[in-house]
Image (cartoon, rainbow, N blue to C red; front, top):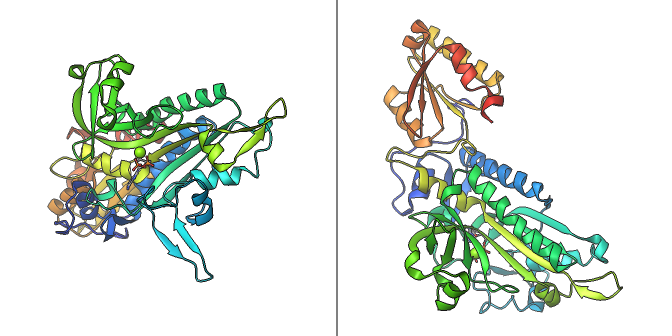
Amino acid sequence: MRQSQLFTKTRKEAPADETAKNAQLLMRAGFIAKEMAGVYSYLPLGLRVVENIKKVVREEMNAINGQELIMTSLQRKELWESTGRWDDEVVDVWFKSNLKAGGEVGFGWSHEEPIGEMMKNYIDSYKDMPISVYQFQTKLRNETRAKSGVMRGREFIMKDMYSFCADEETHLAYYESTKPAYMRVFERLGIGDDTYVTFAAGGAFTKFSHEFQTVCEAGEDITYINKEKGIAINEEVLNDETLKTLGITQDELTATKTAEVGNIFNFGQQKAKDLGLTFKDQNGESVPVWMGSYGIGITRLVGVLVEKFADEKGMVWPESVAPFKVHLVGLNSDDVEVKDFTDGIYVSLKEKGVEVLYDDRDARAGEKFADSDLIGIPYRVVVSRKTKEEGKFEVVTRATGEVRHLTEEELYADFDSDENT
Ligand SMILES: Nc1ncnc2c1ncn2[C@@H]1O[C@H](COP(=O)(O)OP(=O)(O)O)[C@@H](O)[C@H]1O
Ligand SMILES: [Mg+2]
C-alpha cells in the first residue's frame, strides 16, 4: 500500500474531548474516527488490525470445532421477555426502538436468547449435538460510562460463541477446552503472559464464570493475582468463601488493574430450560440442552494492545496483528533515481508476499519518522540516496529500537513471509 494513497491522516494532537490513551493514539494515527462517546469508525489501518485479531480468534475457534455464522442485530421483544431479560431493571444496557409497522425491538447486546431459539429448529435428538457456533458481531450496549476509548464502546465487535451438548460430560469437556483455546489467542496476540483465567461473578450452573483478565493500567477491573499458583480472582467475588474454596489466603494475592478481554459462562441446563430448548435423549425422553457461552472483546483487544505496548513515540503492534509488517520509508524522493530505486524495493517486497506500507509521500524525513513511530508497524526499512549508493538498508525494529544494516538480499531473506509467519 502506498501511503500517499492510503485513506487516513495522522495528527499531532488528539481531540480534546478524548481522554483515553488508546483512542487518542488510534485517532492521531488515523486508525479510527470518533462519531460520539463510545462510538468509533474503523478506517483502513484500524480495520486491518481488527481483521488480523479476528483471524487469530477464528483459527482458534475453528480448532475447537466452532463454526462461524452471523446473527441479527434486531431482537424480538417477546423472545427476551420469555427469559425475563427484556426488562431494563434486569439488563441495563438495552437500546430499544419501535417498528413503524408496530411493536418494539431491541438491539442485540448478546445473543444467548436468539441462538437458543434458533436451535429449536435444528436440535431434535442427542444425535444433533455437540454443536458450537460463533460470530463476530457488532454489539450495541447503552453503557452509562464510555470513557475508556475503544475498550468500552456503546458499539463494539465481540466474538461470541455458543455450545450445545447432549450430556454433562461432553458439555464440561467443551467448556474446559475453551480455556486453552482462549489462552492460545492471547499468546498469539502477545499478551499471554499477562492474561489470567479469573474466577468471576455471573455463574449460573457453576458458582463462578471465568473471565480472561489482562494486566493493564487502563483496565476497569481489579483482579487479585498469584502468578506462581496461577490463581486470579475478580475483586467482585473476593470473599472468605471464595478464598476457602480456592485454598488460598488474601495475602498471597496481589491486587492488579486489569482489563476483561474475554468471559465464558457455563449455563448447565438452566438457560435451555428458560428457553424451552429440549431434545430427545437416548431413552426418548425430552431433556434440556447443556449450554455455554463464550465471549471475546475484539475491539477491546485493539485498545488493550495499544495501552500495553505503546511508548512515548506512539503505538507498537505485535507482528500477529500489525496492519502491515514493514513500513518502507523512502527518503530523498525528489531525486528521481532514488525514487525509482525505492519503488523497485517496494515492488520486490510485495512480490515476496511481505505486507508493506510504503511511505512514498513528499514529506520531510523527520515527519515520516514521527508518523512511522506513531503508526507502530513492527519493522521500518529506510531507503535513501545513501542506501542506493552503499547497498545497505537500515532496518529498525519498532518494539526494541534495534537497528540493523542489511544488504538487499539479506533484507528479502529477513522478511521472507514463510519464515516469519
Ligand atoms: N462496552 C464494551 N466495549 C468493548 N468491549 C466490551 C464491552 N462490553 C463487553 N466487552 C467485551 O466483550 C466480552 C464479553 O462481554 P460480556 O462478558 O457479556 O460483558 P460484560 O462483562 O460487560 O458483562 C467482554 O469480556 C469484553 O471483552
Ligand atoms: Mg463479562
